[in-house]
Length: 108
Image (cartoon, rainbow, N blue to C red; front, side):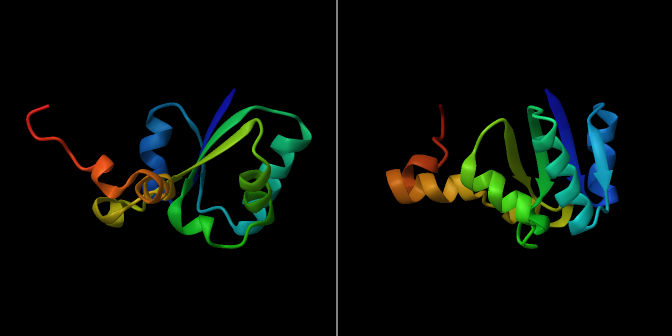
């Protein structure tokens, strides 16, 4: 299984230190081509993708999120917005189970 991180150069430095394959400052076309190659080669992959790239209308991101399969895309926040970041899965859990489920339990 491949582990890949895509985002701005500052954010990718940390992933590179962990030995993860990184793509810094990749264009929407480059990201689409990378994901297309993963699908074409039938590779299993965990792809960390910087939050702002999720909304750029990259066709393969939309396709992979809709169909599921062997490529998992995980959204990661920008360095300067990490504290205010709320992932989509957290929002979904809050809607389904109630926001109190996600609150920290003091003393546990």
